Length: 626
Ligand code: F1P
Image (tube, rainbow, N blue to C red):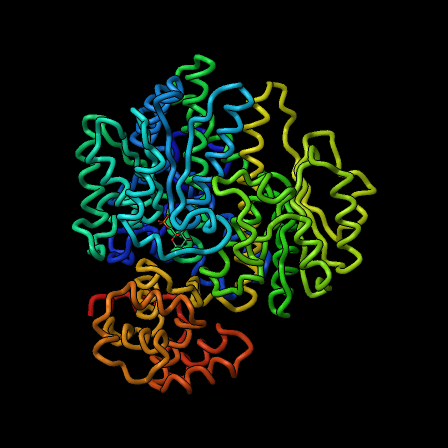
């Protein structure tokens, strides 16, 4: 049976999942629950991986079910109404560019998407000869666009300070704070600042947990929790002074990996909002529920278009998996915002899979000029900040070989002679050169360009007859399609490399408090041991010691995460310590004795009698508050 539906849909969404039942991993917020669909994804083959991710992504468009718990969804009336209300506020701001501003802010992926939306919509305004009206903030500054900077996420004061700077002199500000898990202190600080200055600010919170699941943990050095901030916003929403946009999209395919569904849903929801406001402000089109529903359907179509290429995508997953297993690299060579999509996907691999910064990298034509980021050219910060195609040719290409996979990301409107030249050059070093090429109906990748690529995923979009804005909307959709494809291949590739156990990111970087809590939850779930014991093992792995001292035990979590961000294989080491009740050195050598981390963990848990059954893993959660 498929999910119940009131609206017309383009795709089939899965049946209301087990995660929607009361009591399913009850102590965890939706964004941190494990998704029953992908419980066994670590053992799936490439085609199955793509299929499971297709089902998971389809949950974004699922409607409210008739179960006891009724989470509001993207299609829920309450969400549509909030979108309309916020779009109307934004319309007013767009009409008064001198004194007003829309600010988007986020940490990690959420901040990168804030940057992407803001630069795209400022370009749209420029094309319409209008003044720029959007600004973005990303925790950790522009270097966080390209690399993982998780620590600033924990600082509410820093968030508020940045916001104050960006908005200096403005009379009206619509502030949109994105925290998929309703959890980032950086965003909490900004929302609180807005609520204390309501004469200027209208705060909007974007996330994918119900408000009662907002993080209710004390924030170091601050007087509020995220939950308290969200509660106050809920009160203010009654008088249209603040808004919360928080539909449920279901747990992530890889537990907690909010870069995936939550990231896609952020992009979808905010683009719909921005487009509605633009059309109202500049084309006099009324903001209506039907208009928003049409847009939502268009995004469902992108899901269909993307996954119609499942077979070809799975070939790429296999290829990327092989490269990563052989110690090779994956390079995304993109044009325009598709280059940005590659850079974003690459930046997420170190914190999610414990990958090296060089394992997956993204490059864009014209580097920072094309990025158009606020801090300009930051290449001097280090080799990982050299992102232009020229940098790739100069620094990387000489070392590229058949173990590496290179993936071009372009549309047929990009400079095909430049694409052809670069492809010819790269194909001299590796036979693993592939492409994702977007075209419009009736247009094909020319034969001379085709010849350099081992495979091409060719995505065909309808011809847009309407003007500038129609092309712009299609560009946004191509970005989403590319995001989905890249998320699939980087996730799938790391699954094949053995970085995922069940659907848990076992080798995550424990670099902020949210990730520290996630690491603990994973340890409890896979080992079934008490929270206290799991924390001890985690600290042993972080501090490289078998003897935990009192100063270590009593340190604040941010101290632990500071230390952990420089360490490798922290969670896998802790799992083995717990499973074998062994020393740190023994744990490390047991990990080294197996070709993949997943096999090592499986062997250790099997030896302790924890047989691999999904139910047993789910049972681990009951020890949560021990
Ligand atoms: C922000 C974030 C994620 C990242 C990682 C750590 O999450 O930086 O983007 O992938 O999981 O947290 P959120 O505040 O949007 O929930």
